Image (cartoon, rainbow, N blue to C red):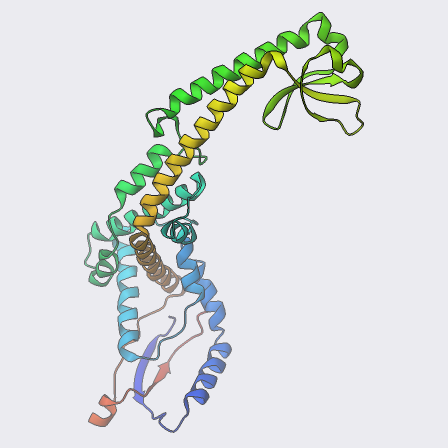
Length: 342
């Protein structure tokens, strides 16, 4: 990136130990501010996992690998120039959640939405390259391995709401159960409201509100008036002046409400367990798709950065006899080169 012309010339590093070579390379990368270059590339990523890949970048010292990486970047620039950007924008990295599901864990609704978002990015990566009007064989090979998991994504978004809640239509019975929960809630609160607003309640209660203690509906009774409200004591205020009592008159209604709430919770857990099991079964495919989508976004980030700084591809040319051509040890002669950060 940023090199106006590069020519290849043979040098020998046979006499240099691996440790010395590693040290010299590390020093050279420091002098070149390579870590800052990595951050600049990462700023051009759009998919969360690709940013991590960009920050872990290290130069290749293999000529063939360098050539392929440059061809990838060139294809990325061609794709961006001719077909427009590929929308991979997402900060979501559901790898941890997918791995947990693969081990049998049950995910939350928000966890599942992160998985769904990753699947959407994978789909856009695959279609963005496949639908391109230009030939980009290396990028096509990169996304070819992204699995089609649209059915899993559809299962998640059809059963989990945008806030991570399990939707009423997630099962055939969940909506009906929730309607019964609401009716039971209304029954018990209306009965307590009548009690609170009665003449007897005016002088008996510390405050005219309905509270919940230990998942039970209670009213706040003055301690000295305890005998006027037969019921179950579920707690007391810090001063002891108030008792939180569930009147016997609403115990059956409260029980009905609690039973329905527990039934709803069981149904919600069943939905989350089913979807988590689907994710776990396909965990390897999802993680592979994430990896490929991140790799594509990294290529596009390199292409965006290369365009920004006016970088050009390095044309490798070996000089010398057949011995030079067969050697893996080469150096670069840089002509009219400039630092990418300057």
